Length: 268
Image 1: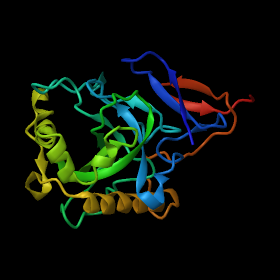
Image 2: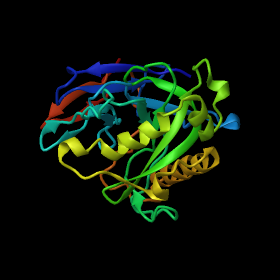
Image 3: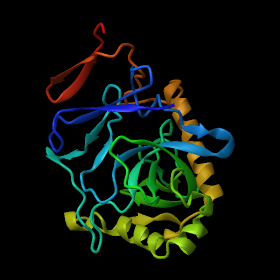
């Protein structure tokens, strides 16, 4: 299974979008149409790269837009960029999300005591490769960090790209600590301080900032998959989320109306 992207608009503008197509050329949602599993028996997942390592533009899956393309986050009318947190440049991993997952804002997590953040679950890929924006990769889950972002549970799942030449050496969070010394500490500090340059306080964490292991992380990912299933089957109120899925044909017209994107399916 492979996917391609189509960029529309210019990067670093309000109109820039990254749309996804499947192997048949159909436009699809990276939130809803890309399968969560690359290999369910081996617990290998798909992940959508939103932000390549060392970059600063805060790109994300547009969960409220038709077909959920990638777009740059906006705050108070301005494009958002993550500040450099010394000594790092931009994001220190390939950052993205696992499709077909959803952190339910109506569900209070039994461990963190906070509800979900209304987004797909986030991943931090620690592999050697600097991925491309919109790249869909296969990943192995190693552990997770429970960030509490403005009172919401915002899981950060630590993964490694299955294409990494050392992937077989990484099977749990302790392997990251042993083979990439300092990386987990840098990850914790990055998430703790990345909003401080914007005048915000340091972020808080559940479990006193402890990274939870692979089994815990797998359980968390699979739980958010169940929340997504309830969302897509309309057992849970979607609110403003757009749950539209793939569009037939290969030539949809994108129309900008008041800076909102609408797709109209046109004949190929």
